[in-house]
Image (cartoon, rainbow, N blue to C red; front, top):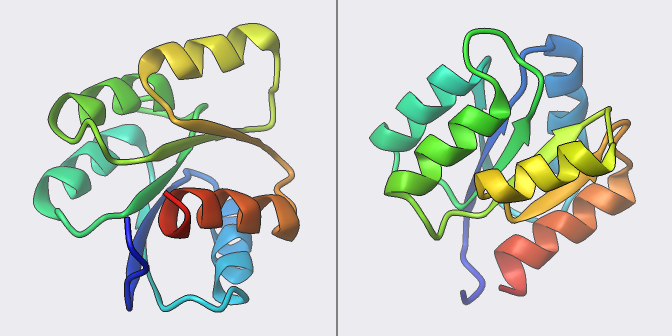
Length: 128
């Protein structure tokens, strides 16, 4: 993928404070970003169906209505090449394996640091 003028990132996060925190971190990067927000996996799937411009998803795993694992599987069904990064406070080996078998491309542990988020976004947006 060559560097674009603007990237669209979908943050899937049911906790408003976590969403705002990630959004603030992303705003500090030297990228022109369009940030979208979904409050659960079901909304994330709908947004992805309606918006082909999404370049990266930061997917919370533990959410009401539809969890991240289910949402990842559904989104990968119609957007197999869309990078999805699972984000969770619970970093057990089983949860990581479950996320990767659902189809996620990467994994980031909460609390998310500016440096780790910067590495992940660069890896999947600019260097891919």
